[in-house]
Length: 160
Picture: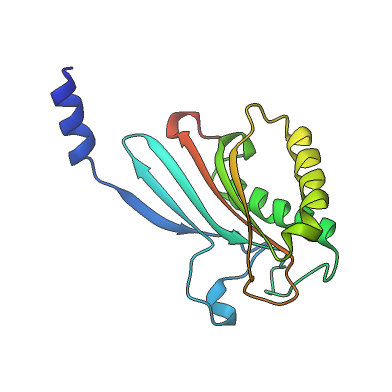
């Protein structure tokens, strides 16, 4: 196949997208008045891309859990993302990028990074995902951390 033929195939292939969720751990954002999907699955030429929306320490009823405890909120956030990935046949090994939002980065970054490092070691990640840490006002005053993520994998290697 020539480069031109390959480029034509890439540019003419349909892009398939659909919302993703996992109701066992997260409710729909619409349930509490927000207008976004928990994530989006995009398929293009055998490549699957998962765009995980900002995810935080909430439960399947949309309630904040672990109020005031950054470490527990971080672990719950990782759990929620793990469950979203799993619902699409992906794992943390498929994550290529995260964006991590902290309410108070000066106060909380050290503890957040310790929890993230421990979690990534538990997952056996190598290489680690690209990442950015940002201080931000989060959508709820009782949330201390929120993480969004991008995963990429080939459909033929997708876990069932």
